[in-house]
Amino acid sequence: MAAELRANGHKLTPQRLAVVRVLREATEHLTPLQVLERARGIRSGVGLTTVYRTLDLLSELGFVRRVHLGGGCQAYAPVRQRAGHHLVCQGCHHVVDFPCAGLTELIEQTARQTGFTVASHLLEFEGLCPACQ
Amino acid sequence: MAAELRANGHKLTPQRLAVVRVLREATEHLTPLQVLERARGIRSGVGLTTVYRTLDLLSELGFVRRVHLGGGCQAYAPVRQRAGHHLVCQGCHHVVDFPCAGLTELIEQTARQTGFTVASHLLEFEGLCPACQ
DNA sequence: GTGCTAATTGAAAAAGTTTTTCAGTTGCCA
DNA sequence: TGGCAACTGAAAAACTTTTTCAATTAGCAC
Image (cartoon, rainbow over all chains, first blue to last red; front, side, top):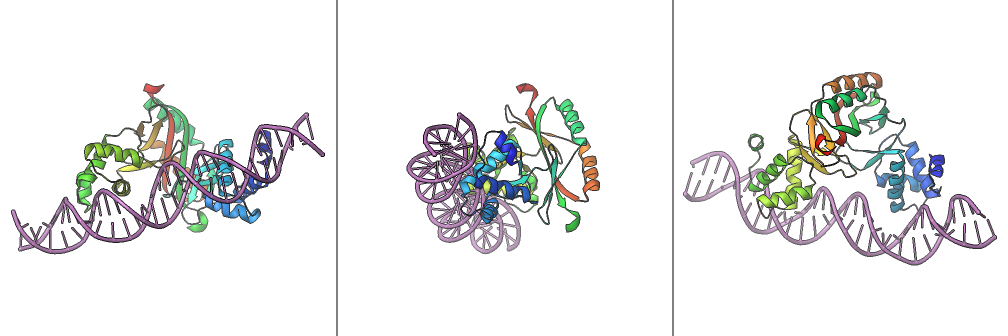
């Protein structure tokens, strides 16, 4: 991630690296406030403004994804596999990506039926992971 | 919708009916503030608090669905077909539900692969409707 | 109809979240 | 090592959402 940031012309500040590390290590979705707390554990003095800015940046670059289920809407989860979609556990709130081969077909079918051209999509499943069952 | 509200033990106040009518007539997703403006066109003096409360209520009863794409997260769209999923047009912001037969299979497949039990899901496509293309 | 009661309402306040502003700091390239 | 654009944090502003509370009202029983 750091290398990619660099490649896209962004500076590698300690604040940014702290946020990146928090997200890389997270297995749950985190709100900006939770990201702040954890980032401060790595480097004290990180500001909330910077967390918001860094989340925006990482989101633009595709490293994190906004997660939407469960009432709240403003949580982020790291993207582990490109083009995957995700499962959210209602027990431990962990987020797991999964590859979904069948979706392309579903998109095409829907496009045919409705006449829409589909540009992007959001697919989230919510349930219980094996450990929480 | 009014009949269902009644059946679930809720009162049919003019404020509630105004919000219900706004949502029933909407073909786009609306923020609480937009719902307020339109509801005031039907009955002046509706309060924002009431709009929030009514949206919660209708959401619980399954008459409206929270829509999440496009940056913002706090918009509602009326549910036209039960158990449908939706397409959002990037041009005119209209929301169209579609039945998705293929999804059940995809859920089962994902459950098998990951060991999760899937309780609920959210599927949104974003693109351009025939008129906007 | 009339009266009762619990549900509902709107305004205001409080709480919470996100964005903007700005002066100061700092990573990175030459 | 110096210069400068990018970046930062604090504070303020802007917004959104929830809570509180006294007043109102829909719907039921009579």
